[in-house]
Amino acid sequence: MATKKTASAKKSSTTAAKQTKTKVTTVKAVAADATPKVPSRKLQSKGLLQGRSVILGAFIAEFIGTFILASVAVHSQGQPLYVGFALIAIVLTVGTLSGSHVNPLVTVGAWATRKITGLRALGYVISQVLGALLAFVVASTYANAAPEVSQQAQMLGQQSVALFSANPVPDGKEFYVFFAELLGATIFGLAVSSAIRERRNRAAQAFTVGLGLFTALVISGVAASYIGGSSVLNPAIAFTLQAVQFNSSDWLWPVLIYIVSPLIGGTIGFFLYDVLRGESDGGDDKLIDDVL
Image 1: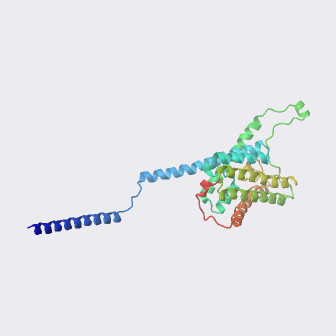
Image 2: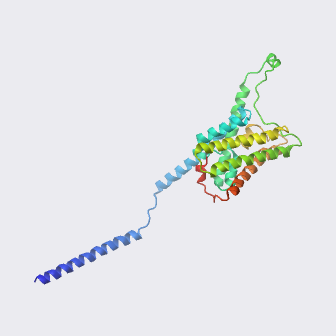
Image 3: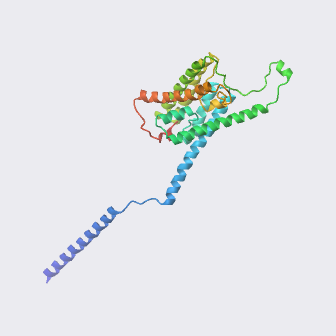
């Protein structure tokens, strides 16, 4: 009798173990066959809106940064030291939002070396040009509202307020100014590319970019001044300083010098740094958020 009960108990235990194993196997199979959860439409739309707001914030940051830089350039009469330190302040202020390009030269160089997408680069350039044009409008409004200087004050040497502008391109010396602008843009592009690629702290990156612009403006500006020209190194701010005026009959050379030349030079600077460093970025668009 005891033997039968023992055999029955063993049989029941074996059956229960088989059922448990079968259940575990079934659960595992179901878990293995389960499809990954797809985010709901609400979550997808929320992520899309957040992405759009980040891009819009970057465009606004470029607009504000270029407005500030162009305002400093026109009010300081293009002094390299003031412009360089203004760029440092801009980088430290809005650098986390857009990377503080505030210059089509930088944006085109970053796009050409596949650091940002073409769509973002286009949005940056448009924002920069609009910011520079607004700076011109504001500066012109205040300059025009200044009181007129009397005849007696003019005799004493006081001059009426006039908005600062770049020197006209000297006749017969266009190529000299073109290459001065090209040289300065290459130096500045090299400095910016260094700040992007070398992961320093933000303050060091800001000073690298600001002092890079200061150095480039000194070299190209002095070279251009020998022949009576000017150096801008920013196609957007060229409109603020009236270096480019499409209502003039001889607009071609100013466009080549102050728009085309900086874009070429900046791109050369970006590529030159990549060659010197001996590696390629591979089109990582995330770098734009870490720039400067």
